[in-house]
Image (cartoon, helix red, strand yellow):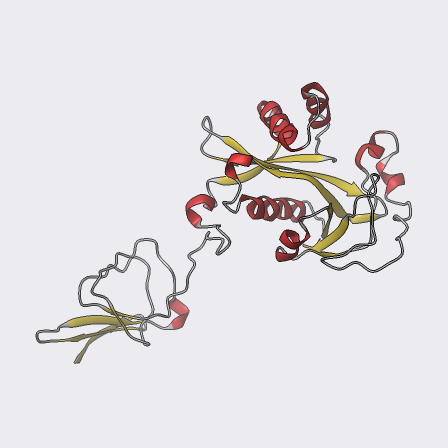
Length: 271
């Protein structure tokens, strides 16, 4: 084995003979994943090697298991591979900025909670910059977009830094691919970008899903929702928050009930 040279803190080694091989030692500060890496089935492992962008590997190259996965943009486990969730392909858009999304969003939300199309369109048309905001999760390039999911954000009475998220739904044909997680992550990013610090929500049976996303059991709050159309928002934000019902809530049991008497879980996440 001999040392072949050094460049910018990176050292190249090679060995000769029948089993000639080549490897590169790079300081950890230069560790970067590159999608340009080309791998060979003959690769073997060394605990000493890390990678550089654009480095092309050939048969006999010795490399290290220290490469950090997943690459940027990959959302990790739970069926959320980057083949579906590349940053440039998925985005949330407020539908008041895209009137062409009103009908597909109405059909999507109605697929989960049935209502007349006219009534649903009327509700979605209330989306505005000052809340409520209806967000559509889109995939594909302009002109070939498809609506994957929907979420609605409203202000919370008595909590100026909080938003209430509801009507969270993913297209039935796209379920099981991790889009629910992506929809919530993009919704949180949108809320954070608007200066809010907490999201609140309710669920009847998806508390474990939300728990995996970092949501915790919470006291009830009051969504401004339709109240904002009849009471000025500045007045709503000065009102006391909803009175907490008695009892202790866990991820499997709740003392709270909705208007039909069905158990309901209140949750929140600081974003």
